[in-house]
Image (cartoon, rainbow, N blue to C red; front, top):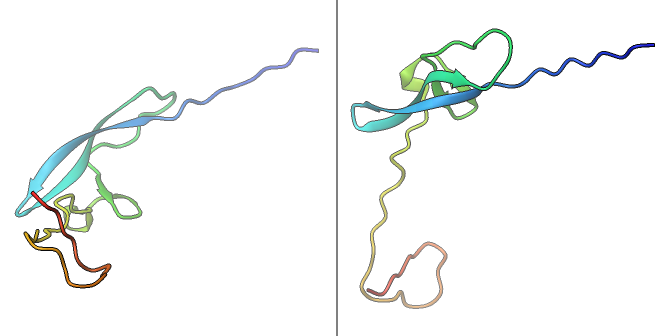
Length: 84
């Protein structure tokens, strides 16, 4: 009796940072390390996976926070205080 095992290796995306107006998003520009047919390139990284439309891609710019030079009065989870 002879057993054969087939191993399929998953592909790893090669990502580039793309500027879209005031946004920064990730685009799949290639793939490496997998077996079988190479997946499509040109897709963008969205909140739940890959998306074709750049408008649906996740913005990597983040949120702007304001730093204060004085500590808040009383405890608050909404305040950020950093002493410089």
